[in-house]
Length: 340
Ligand SMILES: [Zn+2]
Ligand SMILES: [Zn+2]
Image 1: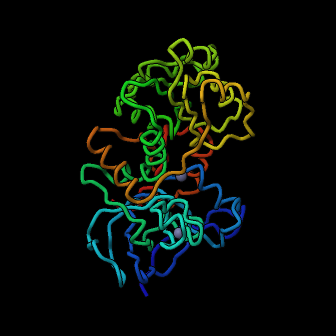
Image 2: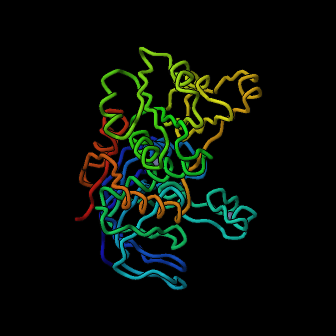
Image 3: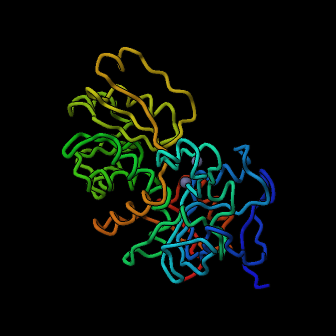
């Protein structure tokens, strides 16, 4: 049997292992990708540290996968060998639960697959993907550019395009990291009056380069008061994990304003009921998207020139690359380049 290199997590809290495995064969309804690049996401921690009950080990992590279709299993229509495609967090769905029957595959309640968690992901040379979870990659995007769009990209793009904000509305992006640097670009290209909020005055020129019309330094300024001065935000897309930082912007929501969490805050949020009631404000969240949402995200990037900023590592240095992502110092997404 032909072999491949993969990086696996042997058990919860285990160290990454580089192993030789047999190249998997695609079963019914699935294709095999020759993986070209895989982004490293903060949520890979769930697999690394065993933070979700559905994970079994050993597990190959990675849910920002760009590759080329290399083999097609039985029962697959609409895909060809040699096509450029990828997969994100959403790895498959049952097709018959109430969510699926409503076309809402991301909230599938019976057999939801999460790439790199419930099935093997992209820290490998080859992987099998459910055809229903597969998204096309436009030719103008390189593999290392495409990969991060399958999680960081689709999450921010989809959160914003479903936010209810309209052209010209004041939309703030809280945080300027892996998610936020994409969020600001999307918000600006979607035609929103875009506000970047981050810690430190030094990030202002960068935020403006990405397309922010306004910048708020949450260290020296009160972000809620500053947003209020601008008329109040229609949407605040929160990409940070600091619950305190999220708390500090809530008062900046305008009438009918909505805070959308795409980053998971490290503590429960406290909110005054009157803030929500009086101005019909709300707090919600947004969970990435399905295959067609990823495809829309990549097409929008191809159309507008939006690209993630990346740091590239080879597969063999996955452990170091993961630590780099965890350090919070990467600018801004760490990506494994597996083949060129
Ligand atoms: Zn992710
Ligand atoms: Zn379902």
